[in-house]
Amino acid sequence: MSGPTIREEHGATTFDWGAGLTIEARHVVRGVRGVRATLRVVDLSCENTTVGRGTVSLDDLRERGQFLGTLRQRDGKVSDWDAKLLLVTEHLASKEDEAQAVSQGVLASEVTPVPVRWTWQNRMPAGRVQIIGGDPDLGKSMVTCDLAARVSVGGPWPDGAGLAPRGRVLMLSAEDNIEDTIVPRLQRHDADLGRIRLIGPQDIDGYILPDGLDSLEERICELQDSPGDPVLVILDPLEVFIGAIDTHKSAEVRAALAPLEGLAQRTRSTIDGISHLNKKSTETTPLYRFGASLAFVAASRSALLIAYHPEDADEPENERRRVFVTAKGNLGPKPPALVYRIVDPGVVKWEGTAEISAYQLLAPPPKGGEENSPQLDEAKSFLCTVLAAGALPYSEIEAEAKSAGISTRTLRRAKEKLGIQAFRRNKEGEPRGTGSWYWKLCDHWPAGYAERFMELKQKRNAEITVCLCCEGPAPAERPDDGLCSVCRDGAPWQANRLQRWKSGQPKEWDGEV
Image (cartoon, rainbow, N blue to C red):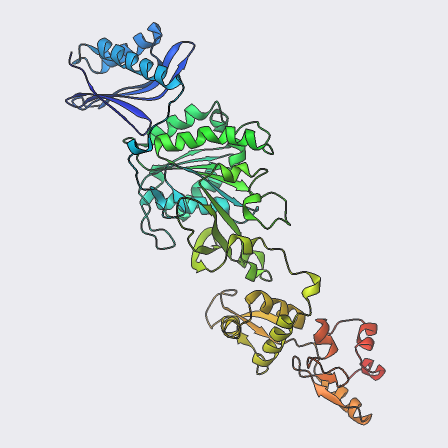
């Protein structure tokens, strides 16, 4: 028997005897029963090219004999299966002995540099573990369904960074049901369901580390037609799959994640772990918000953050934009943040890039001492001016404000202080709730009341001015910002009598018109 050509790549050892006959060995370990490996035997001359597949203790005569029986039954043309399997066993045993010896390292001059492989350019490196973190109800699982769909069909990435490598996907979920949640989401994102394998909450016990590492590697290898083929692995949530450890202890988290990183590098698969942010709401350093320990981020090559867009704080929650931003990426430059919405019926709609960082997303709300800042006064004056002639589309107001050097956050604070009303204006024939947003000045003076107030002041020969916000009377003794007391305080007309009295309105005002 002539010896085979032996190749080692992507975590697999391949024995090639030529003429289409190969034995591929993965997950090689040495245990109490000798060398154990997952074998895949291929003979291209057979109708069923894969003539044998299984995990075998090669030093166990009974197990090896059963595997030999399968090979002889399915491919009787090869007469020396026993000799071939013995050669494989001896080679793997020798390699395991070398692997268990203390490494002497390698000279840098002997290493051939290779470029970083990307699943998603500058966001998700291939053959690495990354973490996607965010608070609950932000659509993290929906985003992973969108990513899975793009990989399954080789579709374009939402930032225009080319096409996703067409591959297969392994999704393990400890929370979402397969039938009524995951599959419908994948369908709505136009995924190729035949290229996605799902493992639901009832079946994840066999994949929890460290014992489940071999099972996880087997599933990845089964999805690869050849070693190194692209596979996206999604663990949702990551904390469930790293086992019963104290996630507050850095050493335990690193020890749990290190085998997962080794698995990603051996199989060249991209592993995404989904994680909730911790409850340190005053912590503005993004890397300290992932999980209970900094080790979650330190052990990952990329950390991606999902959060609400701060400019949409006043919008209804189901209409707020979300931001997908790189918090850590040490294998390439950080790309721009991406903006998306969740639209009915549960589809991720990407809306381009945004100039915002992970630090800005986690910044605390303004403190009370900033309420009367010059920037806020400028924004209030700006809104009173641009809305004096009537309602305007929010998009135009925002664009004008940016041209005037007013940030969107300050603009919205000014809106709240002035009591400005936001409403949708639908075009004829459009469904309700689909029109553009408009802003208009508050309307807290009921019809006729402002006119009567002016008459009362004139009878008393009182000096008055007109409020820049509601065009009602503003006492001249406090014209610093051109607003009446109600607009200045942001209070609606339905404030109690005492509050109206303190704002400078006369007793006669409580009468009916």
